[in-house]
Length: 75
Image (cartoon, rainbow, N blue to C red; front, side, top):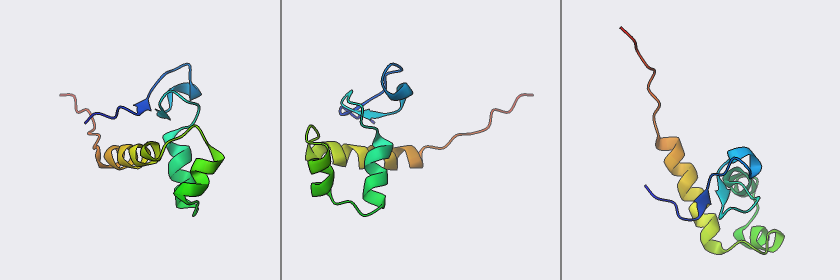
């Protein structure tokens, strides 16, 4: 799956997934939504974000939750 609006850069926020290279993490957006912040409030607080950024953050978070990590078994 490709997420054009989600970036990973070790020099920005320690490599956490961010919105378009900005210092706003996916976790920040998802956390704000989880605590009841509306999309409108988030966009007011971060005027450089776009509505599509919120959608991308949610889609990325959902994708990451569906990923399965299997333990490496060595013979």
